[in-house]
Figure (tube, rainbow, N blue to C red):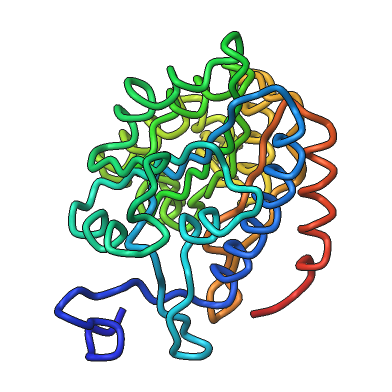
Length: 285
C-alpha cells in the first residue's frame, strides 16, 4: 500500500483494495441485505458481527476513490440489524471507524478493540445463542493466518451463526505450505495448525510418494485439494450443514490470493449466496 496523501488523510493510511476485494464487499453486502430482510420477519433477535472490521472505508485501486468497508455496508442495510459487534485488533482502525456518522449515536453498535480470537468466544458469541432465539451473520476476514479454528468451530456448533470466511491460501503457501514442508518456519507451521485446528492440514496438503530412487518424499498438492479438505472440515468437524463451493479471489496478476467461503445451517441461505456469487464466477479482475 502506498503511503501518500491520497490514502493517508490526517496521517492515517487506509487500506488499498483491488477488484476482487470489491467483489467480496459486494457479495457480503447483498447477502447481509437478504439476511436482514428474512430475519426481520422471524421471532429472532439477530446481529451482524465483523471480526476484522477495519477503519470503515478502503481506497479502491481501480478508481482511487474511497469505498465503504463491510461494517459501513452492514450499517446501511434496511431493515437494520438489531445489533452490531465490530471488532478489530488495531485500535487506530477502531478509532477511525468510530468517527463515522453511521456509527455515532447508535446504542445498538458496539465497537470492540481486541483480538477476535478471544473477544468472539468470550464476549460476542455468548450473546447470540440458539437457545435464546438469537442469530448472527459473522464476517471472518483475517489479513492472513490470524484466525484460530476454535472460533470457526464454535460458530458452527452453536447452530445460530452463519459465516463468511476468508481462507488465506496465499499466506498459507508463503508461510507454511512449502514444497519442502520441513523447510517452512516453525512459526508459520504453528499458525497453520492454529487456523486449521490440528495438524491434519499436513495430510490435506501433501501426499507421500516414492521417488525414482525408492525412498519416500512429501509431494505438495494444489490449492484445490487443500480447499476441498477444508470444506469437508467445515461440514464434518465444525458442523455446518451447508458449505457451497468457495469463490477464488485473485490479485492483479490473476493469482488466487484467498477463497471466500460461506457456511450455514440453512439451505435457503446457501442458495441465496450461490445465486449472488454466480455472476462473479469466471471473471477476471
